[in-house]
Amino acid sequence: MAYTWRQEISYRLNFKKCIIHLQADLESLPILHRDEFQVKELSLESGKDLNSWVELLNYSYGDERSYDINKAITEIQNHLFLKDLSTFLVFYNDQAVGSVSAGVYKKNPKIGGACRICVHPNFRRRGIGEFLLLYAYNFLKSQGIKKGESVVAIKRKGSIFMHFKCGFYPQYNRKVVQFKEQKRFFFVRLLALYKLRKYYLKYQKKNRKLFSPEI
Image (cartoon, rainbow, N blue to C red; front, side):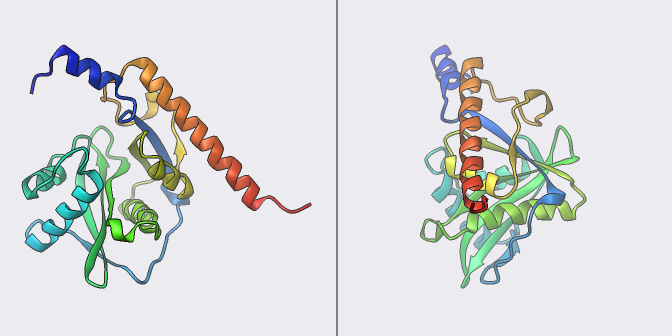
C-alpha cells in the first residue's frame, strides 16, 4: 500500500511507536517456575488454539491492529523479522491466559527473539508476562541460541521494565542490533534512546535501594 507524503511524515514522527532494543545473554537468564500454569505449543491445525490466540492478541494489540485467524497465521508464517516461530499458550484452569512466540532473526539465526507477549486482562499483574518472556528465551536457549534481542515500542513502559527485571539490558548501538528497518526521523530515535536510558537508570537506582545493605 502506497503512503501519501503526509502519512509518511506522520509515521516517521510517531515517537510512541518508535522501537528500542533490549538484549540478553541467554545463559544468564533465570528460569521462572509457575506450577499453576500449563504451557502448550500452539497447533495451526487446532481451531480452538487459534481462537484462543486471536482473542489474546486482540486484548493486547487491538489498538494497533485487529486480528482474525488468517492474520494470526500470517503472523506466525511470515513475521517481519523473525523466522522458525514457535508459539506457546499458557493456561490456568483450562483458560488461555497468555501467549508468546519465539524464533530466530532472519538476518542472523544465531540470535533469538520473542514477540507478541499477550496476557489476558483478567490475569494481569500476576507475573504472567515475566513468565512468558523467560519461557520463550529459555526455550531458545534449549535450541542452542546464546543471545537474545527484543524489540519493544517505547510506549510499552511496562514491557521494558519487565525485560530489565528478567536480565535484559538496553542496546544503544544501532550497528549491533538485528532489526533496524523501522524508519523514524533521527531526532525521534534519539529521543526514544534518551527515554530508554532514563528508564534503565531509574530501574538500577530502585534496585540499588532495594538491595543496598543497611549501615
